[in-house]
Image (cartoon, rainbow, N blue to C red; front, side, top):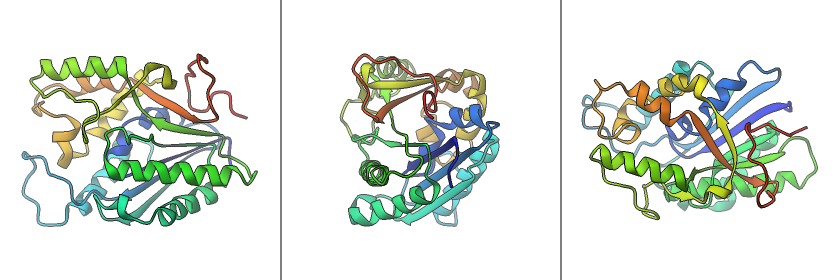
Length: 268
């Protein structure tokens, strides 16, 4: 399937998709030909549960799948296609690389998206599942790009530039949280400001991004750490998610090139 505004997002866990592109999806929801494809490698069943969440009597992965569906319903623009690859949480890096690339590539081959987004080489947080998914997506994109078919015009990596990372870290300290340590697994990793090739102003739809984030209730300790439920999270998160930053992995970006304002900007 082809189209002028087809976007594929390939991530590891539920709630990975709640950041980074949800605002872009909202901005483009009414574009002719817009199609949103979402791929999850795992349902996050081995994750921790927020201490304030009620006791559970079913597998966490099942709950997190429901939370993901609820999040996109709250956001208001669910994916047109959503695939779960059903790998075990925490074990995606152990999947044979060729298998992972083939499964992701099979979906991309069917959809031929114009823009593909995934994790960069550091997985954003150094999580092995993230790194494996990002590398396999990059490889699948490169292989399909070489066949000369339609789509696959741009490959993006989610990222947080250092200046924003520094600002967020100062905020964490003010809220009594431990600051992130660069390079530590599970902490957000920064990338140089000059590597950001796209910065999308999604302030007008930030409330929809927040609505989706807040549905990941088992992960409140990750989504909104240290903030009690009675605090006005919409206001705080609305500021945080008002901008989406992405590095352009393909085509190669010229040093000092202009920062684009939309993931589809400049494409055919």
